Length: 275
Image (cartoon, rainbow, N blue to C red; front, side):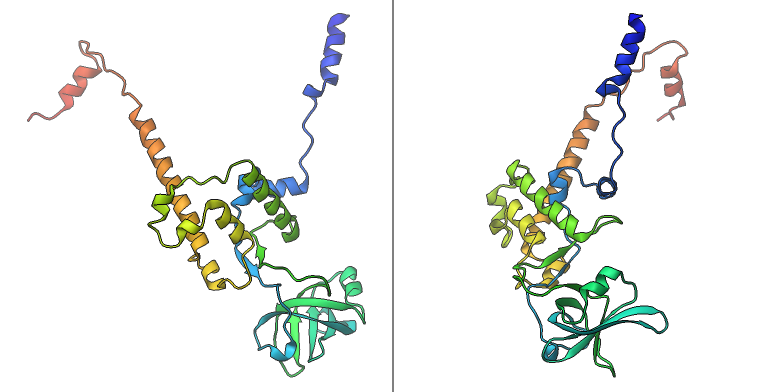
């Protein structure tokens, strides 16, 4: 039965197989619209964290967001209003309570007595001294970052560390593929302040990993020249899109109404007011 054999072969062929289900990470990237390298390159940070320096507790003020480094001198689970993990970090100048209202066994292990860690968060003073609630902790030692740490808009299942690596890879691929070539002539940019020094590639690279001495206010309110360069690019894209739409509308031809006795043409003329 050759027909039956052909049907069986078709069922077994790869082309007829169903596509593999997407992973949780792929679904999360879909929600953010991140598919092509240029999508990742244009997924810009919503804010930044400064992990480029260590601050001593004696040099901080109430309400500061700081990164401190020291040794854990105590760590215990306490029951107060709710179950929480409380560790005490000593940086040699003062001590700080690290408080976690939600925690995992791995965090308790990371904060074992004698461990040397870096903790970053908002400092609060009180009658019991300094405290941080849910600080970001990592092992002490190692080189400090040379740029501000970007924080991106994300969705559940897509942690910041993964997103940072994905954006960096996408930016590199977009550059090597030529997707970041300048579209605005230099003679136009030269008329707009500092913008000639910022091509598209440089502006994107800077906004993903800005130098620690840059003004955070300029980054956050989008007045830095790198942001201004991207605004010019967005304005150009908008104008080109409108021009394309206008040309497409102009190319459309209205249907010809053929004159016929008692037809639509005569009814239209009859309905028009007399001058």
